[in-house]
Image (cartoon, rainbow, N blue to C red; front, side, top):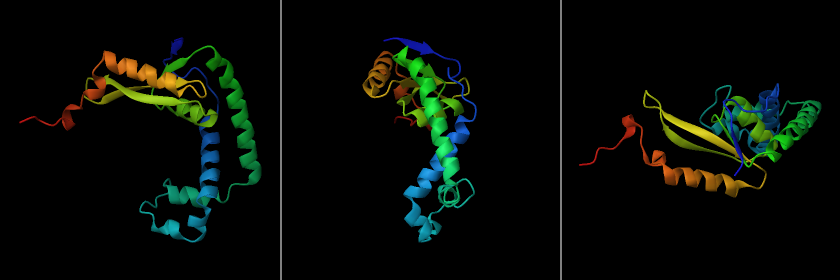
Length: 165
């Protein structure tokens, strides 16, 4: 398995989070249009500005031109990721960092996050691994291999550990 370990995600694309946000807003608004148009989104518990009901509502106002331009940018992002992923089977990156999460969501590259231990303050630490399209099995095999060699996935944070009688 050929892999790269990155301190930060090895692809940087300005405004990837903005593109992802616009696409998610527009597509979720389309999917939940009936919920919004019948005002049944009012029945959802969380109604703050960044909660889903308001994303569905505001997504109804995204101009088609903005959505189409975001989709064009998505194609550029996919084109930038292709040569990088051709060189590796797996990329190990910090978990769910803004750029990495946005890019993998936009390109459809599989990503798997799993525990690798605890910080000095007892908080869980995780890593993300990113793979090629349709290569989810490689990611699962790698994570399984790691878990067979460590016990991190079986450990509980001290504050949540259940004391045995």
